[in-house]
Image: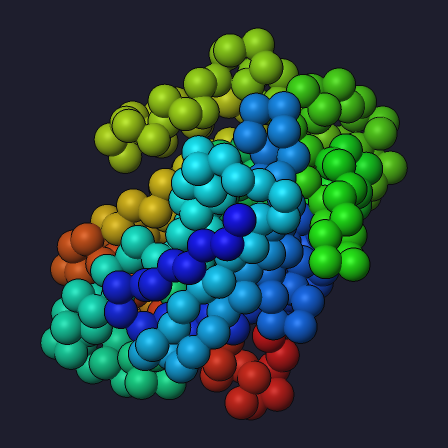
Length: 306
């Protein structure tokens, strides 16, 4: 089955997918020759597919190939996941109009034109990734996550390459703290990942139900779980649920970005950052994404790495 998706507004596919290689390898989201290779879990089925971006930023198209599939329902499920991975449902044109009123954001729009946040395709994948990234640098976090995907995921061949389906909750629930520590997770993080998976399997955490909850309710529900704090809940809202009115103000990189662009001689508190971001309304998520990308771009220009 072949599907073609067209974004509403510009799409720089390379810049959007850069997070899958900036800090290391992601076996569940392989980038090969400009194409994205991934495996969708649909019930008990593993459905590999490839996405080939084509066209200029302002006329981009995503050509999706799902080998051996003719089922329309499968095509719709894959298309929905691809829309998330490329951030197609973000209102980029509206954000650009809003950004004209903010000198900092306005200066970032041209060099980052077409950049979109990529959303985690599944809540469990997002939460495991967030736990992995707590209080460590992203290169180390990506390496730990890659080892976990290979150990507990499923390897599938696609287009002559191997891509791994991200582990399901049942596989992670069966894991042991000792087994996860062998992958370089700390003892605490190993417990958090195993206990999260067991909560999902045992129906103690209904992940699909979170998508219909208001922000405050999502934060309250997630932070009941050991190892999931406000930092994780904010990023879950932003990078899994795609909520526009979210600013992860407790994140160190976000605070550094606000300090660099808006501090006016003094460091900003978390409360001040949230207050400043609230002026962007439903475009807070996009604004934060552009500020972080702006900081990476600045570090690359000054030789500070990614």
